[in-house]
Image 1 (cartoon, rainbow, N blue to C red):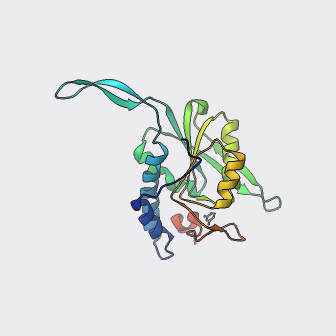
Image 2: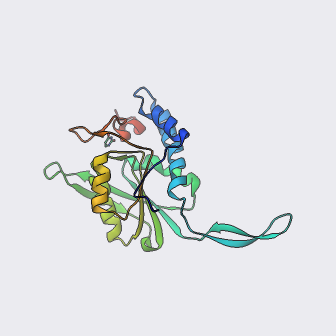
Image 3: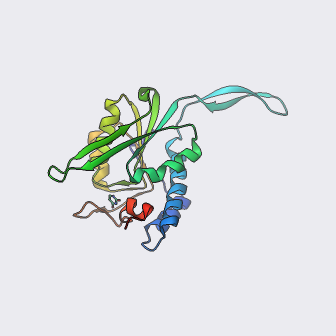
Length: 210
Ligand code: URA
């Protein structure tokens, strides 16, 4: 992708996002909307996947028809909220391999610490799409991308639902080669690192833990 940041302004994405922001939206609706929006965002993030052609016989005649060039895909969820975006991408690309990165924040250093890392083999051959709904401070995204690069990934994209300017700046400084696709770029972070106007804690809202 050429653009470092893509905000998907499609009316369906924007409408569904507004429903998700509303504080009275139920857990079930929030989950469904996240899956639906993710599918639409995944359409955008895969826009430049390489194509080749293959001979196909239609009922009418033979043709060289476009098919994906076979670049393998790995989808990597940043736990736990990233898991809410897996189904949306997998609906579009069912054959994608899936990895997980678990990070927690060390309360003394405020730095992300890895507690889980399991990714598909051959990351260097794959387009890697990292998913996490909220790009807030950017600390966990930067740390996850650091780990994926250490594991060999070279073609990485980041897919989120909402981004804060602080997180985008942090990613662009640490990983300028990783394009970001999001449904909205919000105003700012509050003092606790939550996005404003945002939608609250995405993990709590999708899993009903609050
Ligand atoms: N994580 C969330 O779930 N929400 C925010 O606003 C920021 C980080």
